[in-house]
Length: 556
Ligand SMILES: [Zn+2]
Ligand SMILES: [Zn+2]
Image (cartoon, rainbow, N blue to C red):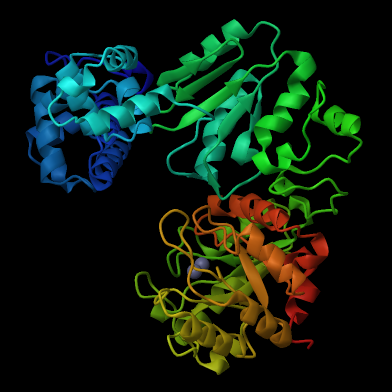
């Protein structure tokens, strides 16, 4: 089981290990520490050290012997000690111990049941079991209660979770990007279709499912169980199985007969409320045929949150987007330069990109003063010269101070092409105060767009108390747009709030808030979130050409 997660090669103390072997061992160690719920900073430090070692031309064994290994970036005293042990003995004792103790299938099952990795390992040891299957048998035989610390109540809870009635559901939603990677990867491996919450682009995904037509389901279910993403099976029927990842997240595989594929895909895509309103679902080989048989037009999955049997509107599509209006560079907390970001945006087929680095009040990361913004202007001008007719816009993500003033003076803001206004600190302000603060900022004539209006971090920080209805009124009067931020842990406005904004007549902007070249890919998440709010191309500012962007608001 373990070899699914880490490749383990026994070190040979006789022969000196080369840098890539040493890096492999450090990475294996990091993977196991992660499995053991170790501090994420520690695991990251080991991964970084492995990367450094791989990129070093001098043999690490020599550097260790001569005591110079700490001159390398990211190698401190504790990693040095591990390296010394590895070079001198050919092994890391703690690594071997972890390899003995941690069965990923047990850890995955334990996490699914709500137990931490350490607790699962303790339980397994006390029960003297080594696999998820043995754990299940021990539980069924009533042995859980023999373990110190497990009372009748805990036993009952674990048994109930194991018996697992109804649809499998993750205990805590996965962020959309993580869920998409997981379900998409499994769907690709099995040549199936991603369904469940992922297909509806829900911001936090609990129901993860893959549907694959099969007249011969048994080998398919076998392949599913063998996938590297799946560490243990928690249910297995003739045409359905539920596997669990090492994080304890359940994933359902449905293997209907080909003539019922469409039916099962509609059902597995959900939402439950939407599907219930279509029942009884006719049997059909594909989704279009299901809708035809129902006498209904096909419905995009993003609109399947509530009962709906009507004609869907022509929703916004990714290719409608002509530029990204919120991105960061190395001038603040981004990882790429102005030109690198701009080139990547041009490669995506955009006409423009707004560079909106932070202003000083953001605090935790570097922010730009007026002076620095003017120096950045030179770099932007150079990029524009190199990339014309593509246009890099001079922008800012300007903090809204607690009293509603903006963090930079009007003469500085007035020079810019695009001003995003953002609340970063003080998200817990009471409703009236917060609303007044943001209203004040929207009245500044230079502000074009309100960033991540509700300030939420999905599953981590609730929405702020901002009175959106009031903000819609002010935004409409002032000609300000509201952002649909595409960062996977933000997706803010949410789909529901997009719908409210559009009903109020307020335009939206689909942005990525990219902090790297890769971050620009999150436009797909922003667009999907806007679609969940029933957005059409005309509702979205950045479906318009450059001229219109430059005139946006100025033309009021
Ligand atoms: Zn921000
Ligand atoms: Zn930002």
